[in-house]
Amino acid sequence: MKTVAALLAGVMAVACSATAPPCHSFGKNNLETPCFNLISSQTAKDGTVFEIREYGVDPVHPEFWTQATVRNSTFNQAETQGFQANFNYISGSNSDSKKIPMTAPVILRPDGDGWFNSFFVPASLFSSEAAIPTSSSISIIPMKSLVVATTEFGGFAKESDFTAAAAKLLTALTEAGYTVVDDSFAQAWAQYDSPFTLF
Image (cartoon, rainbow, N blue to C red; front, top):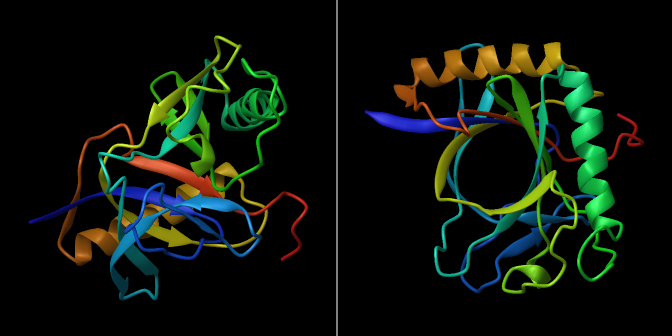
């Protein structure tokens, strides 16, 4: 039986090889993105296109993410508050008062009574203890090895758009013989484009 975690995304970045650390790529908006190995690309009966990817493939040189925790909030509140906390960190709210380049994607994950909102940490900071968050609401976490299923859609995404895409993806995975594992990344909503991008 095949097992994956589900990852939903807006506009996808370009896959890159994980041959030399630190591993990173630049997507269509020239924003730095995490590496992944593309395992397969498939189309479901209803036309849903999805990919099976492996992230966090190099345990010796892990990729890192910021993580803002927003409790007791709606999707919209978590999206706004979590983004702002992360944005403050890359704008200089860190131990070096350093401005850090924006990356992609911005990930939102449900977590019990709240949400995790994350930015990808640039590869130049992977092995550095510099730029430690000064806010207790932000932590830096390594990307564990994950095999995920992804699908994409465009537009200004609302919670209902992600929910609908998740339902289609889960149906496609079931039809293809995959089982989604119970994991903290069992569902992650990733947005790659700036909110100012026109579709």
